[in-house]
Image (cartoon, rainbow, N blue to C red; front, side):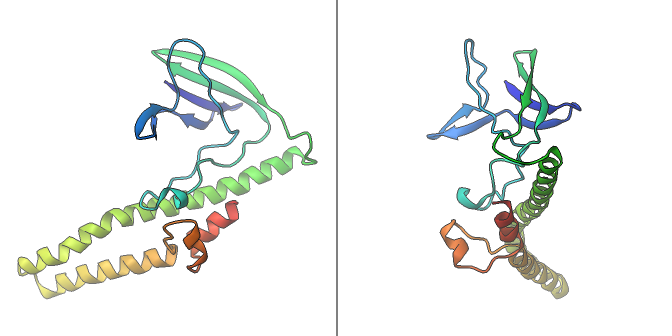
Amino acid sequence: AEIEIVDARGRTVRRFAGTHSVDGKDIAIVAGDAGINRFVWSLTAEPPVKRTHATASVQGPDDGASVVPGDYAVVMRVEGRTLRQPVRVLPDPRATWTQADYVARYDYYAALYGELSQMDTALNEMDALQPRLETLVPVLKSKNAPPVLIAQAQWSQTRLIAVEADMTSSPHSLDETTHFPDRLRERILWMTG
């Protein structure tokens, strides 16, 4: 089963599908069981890409930007059937914000999360490349590769580490974020709250 939240223009704002781990067991995010099932949407858009190499506490947020008050639809697909229900997100009655203020807030956070997604996508790719580069130099040496090729592989590995260090301090927990100087990734995370 899956649930999509779509805005008044028909664009998907958030999608829920698949499984997540609870006490070591894979549990469906959207239950497709017969009967009454409860599902809660946090009124947020799709979250940014997570930094998969990091520990859970510093991988990135679970939610995206808060959606703008307005009309949406909840679309549920289960066992070949599609069910659609309109829903209206109302502004906070305590807030003095205008609709334009809500739109500006959404645009600001959506842009920040977009930057974070691009950065974490690049970091995830670098994390996947690093072990391959580590094994490449010994392989090249064992095959008597030209010294210039070995030097290029060593330079690539060193450069990859330096680029990552410019992008993130790579904290392993929230406590460590105070022990290392913030890099661009941590500054973006700080700006998202």
